[in-house]
Length: 62
Image (cartoon, rainbow, N blue to C red; front, side):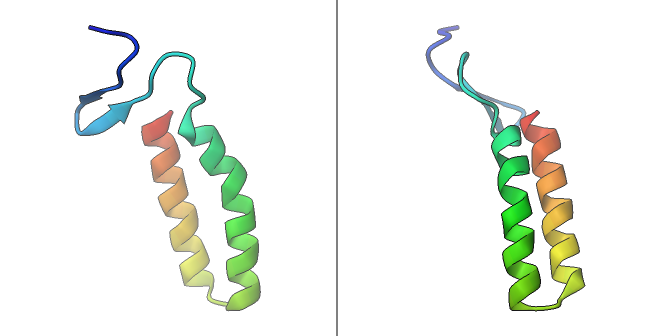
């Protein structure tokens, strides 16, 4: 397998070697997403849905 190309395994993309994992970026970005959403609407259900989604994506992305 060529290590320069990303491959699909189990329906998700495996990042190329040396690339930062997107889980880290998700965790960094999730805070300001929550802040914006909390300011726009006091909808706690929506904020919780964001949190759950980011948690799931973080687990998948590593």
